[in-house]
Image (cartoon, rainbow, N blue to C red; front, side):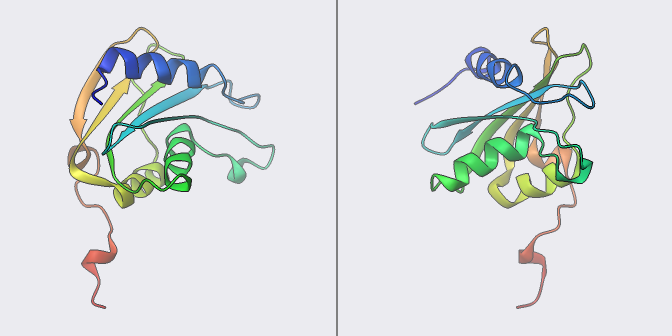
Length: 134
């Protein structure tokens, strides 16, 4: 199954509309495509104890992994502003576990303006267990 950017953007917007963001009022949605073409979405879910908040990217990734998928081919991240979404450091590190250096990352705004990057471009020096002596 191949999914185009417009369809993936639409799924990310739908996920964003489910965000629980009463503290920041900053809603984010993400949609990802696994190696076999399955699509998973996620939104940010805040908590009064801010450290327990989960970002949209990690929500989507955790849903995919919990269903048995470990290889992510593409992800799009969108927010409800006119600024491009940018994943936080924690999300980039989680993405590094399941995305290859050439995986596609689309950063988008609410108006479907987006920029395409490779994962390596958004995290060029990712920490990995492959870097450690075992």
